[in-house]
Length: 113
Length: 115
Image (cartoon, rainbow over all chains, first blue to last red; front, side, top):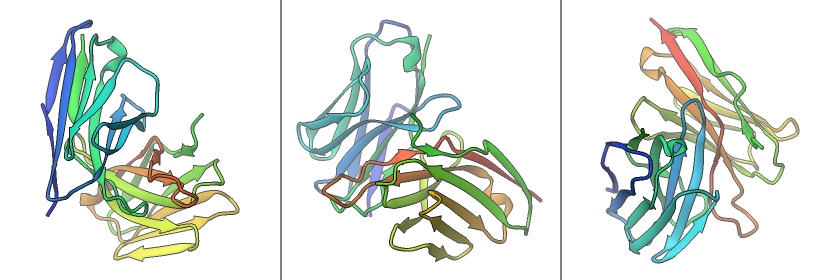
């Protein structure tokens, strides 16, 4: 069966510090991968998605970037965090079929102080 | 511009009764709709989906209804159970015409089922 991991589970970072959140998927090959953010009182906003190694599409211009160095690894980064980067970050995967469900990881709670 | 809207931020229902969660969308190009359930500090879990070629899809206690002319869908939970208490997100995507399965989520509705 497929499993998706995210770490860390929680993170408190000062403004201006760098960020690296990692997501890995087990039990599947060539998945589509996604990064979402849920800000307080808001819905889930798609930040990035990837259909393959090194292929990243950005949905929202912002202070964040994403990379996919391996087939089942997706990384969310920032060089300098802003207060507005606080939120709940979720990684998701799906198969390549467009009708397939997206499955979410447990999430990372990021607080920028 | 919020393309998927859940206008009720919260809903309280008695155990055993029906819960009806509503969702409206503005983009007529959406052709695939999903409902996810989310507990605090966890990732959303998939509940049920419906394609635009259908107007109803049922899975156990969960039924999703789609009204394309009104650009409206709803999730019915019958009977409601205390374990159903969670935030429910509606999501939409455009899967035909070469699009990817990017999901546009609503803001969620917090369902509280009272014992």
